[in-house]
Each structure stands twice: as structure tokens, then as C-alpha cells.
Length: 338
Image 1 (spheres, one colour):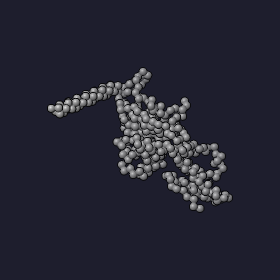
Image 2 (cartoon, helix red, strand yellow):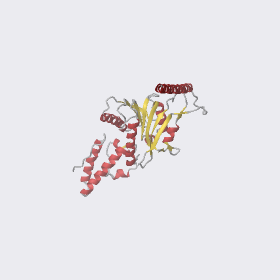
Image 3 (cartoon, one colour):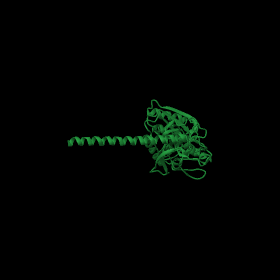
Image 4 (cartoon, one colour):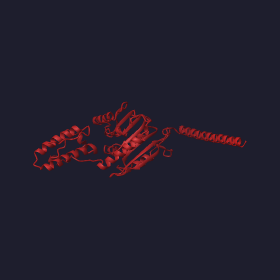
């Protein structure tokens, strides 16, 4: 009679409706009292998994259904339209959640102002970014490019709970593989947090999302990712890390059709590590955009020449300072001898 559910998410109203239905169904069943608690926990665990691990029915998640799932309906159990699609098992989900929190907290520079998330589907990322971030930009992993109202609410509620005072949230209608609303070289940090698989499921090009991340990042900006190690595709599984490492670009003014044209890496440094203690292999890492990315050939040559001149100047100054120290030391020794 005291069956209650704890409020653990914005969808708690759904849980309470299910609790009332469960109570009504159990009263009509001739079941020992000892089994009632088990049935209640079963319903609660299923609904919690739906919220946290992405179980879906047809094309919509259970949270988007107008009526709760009726565990006691034989017609629904036989329905061919009902299928369970769990993206991550609970163990992998919790471990990648912990790694994401540690990675984003430690690897986002405090000087960063603008942060963009690829494939925003909840507000968890807001819980991991530092409060020095002034602007948070979303993108959708849906083919329509729309951000659901529930996602917008979740992002804003997470920001409120964190105590963000000056955070500007831009929920833009754009796909993660086509960041049409974001200018080149305008973002300090891009986050990719278990979003690639959802893009693949919804027909988006996950490789384009990485290319777009490289485009919108400022020189020296960072792509932080926690994704599956191997991504399924039409030609088989592909390595997420290898694609990030091998991503290259043609300098401005080059001919795109010229295969002999020299290409340059988008990311200078890519640090990574395998996520341990998981059932499904994941990779976590940081990719730093090249400082001269996007420059023309002439600009790159001028930058390289300037860098060489600065190195020579630094070496000359160092030699000069060492010579002065030697002269001073020699002078002091001569005064002591005198």
C-alpha cells in the first residue's frame, strides 16, 4: 500500500502514473504478498532502464508514448511493433558516464568560452563542463535536426541545478553532421558523448560530425570524445579513433579535385585511452586542432618562416644571456684574486 517511486528524472510523472497502474493491477491479482514487491521493482527497473539506457518502442522512446507500458497486457507482448533497443548495458553506461565526467572536467581549459555538443539528447553534459563556459550550443542526432522540448528542458534544468549564472544556451535546429548555424573557427570545445551510435541509427553521417567539429573549432580548440571503439557502417565496422587521427584538409585556395595536392592533419595532437571495466569497448580522448588549420599555402609558408625566425631570435638571446653570465662570473673571480 505504500508503493512509492523516488523522483529521479524530469520524467518522474510518468513513473508515478505507472506506479498507480501497477497498484491497481496488483490488487486484482491473486498473488502472494511476497511477490508484489518483486513485481513493483521489476516495473520500476524497466522504466528506469528506459530513461537511462535508451530502450525504445517502435520509433519512439517509452517516455514519449502517450500511455505507459502495460506489463500485464498479452496483446502488447505479442505485438510485432514492440522492440527493445538498448544502446548500452548498465555497466558500460555507468563507467562511460564516470569517464566522461572526469574527461570533460579536467580537459576543458578554463579560458574556454564556447562549448558545443554533438548530438545532444539530454542535459548530462552541462553537469560536466566548468562554470567558466559562457555559451553552450546544442545539435541534434535526429535526421530532422530538431531539438526535442524535453531535451531543451533537461539542458536548462541541469544548468539551473549547477548554478550557472551567465550561461547562454543556444538550442539550434541543426543536425550534428551539418552544423550550419555555427561559423568557422568559433568554438573552443566540442563534446562527443556516446552520440555516434545514435547518429548511425538515425541515418546521420557520423564522419561528417567529426569534420564539422574540426571546422567550427578555433585553432588550438579541443574535441573531447567518449565513443564506441568501432562504429558499424555499410562497409563494416570502422575505428572512431583512426578517423579522428587521419582527418585532413586541403589549404584554402587548393583544387579539391587534385589528388596530388598535399593535405594537412586537422588535429595536431590526439591523446586517447581505452575505457576500462566496460562490456562494450569504448575509447576516450582529446584531439587538439592544428594552430595553422585553414590557412592558405602562402599563409602557412609565412607562418613557418616567422616561427623559424622566432626560434633563431630565442636562441640568439639565450646565447647572449649565457655570455653575459660568463663575463660576470669571470669578473667576480678576478676581483677575488686581486
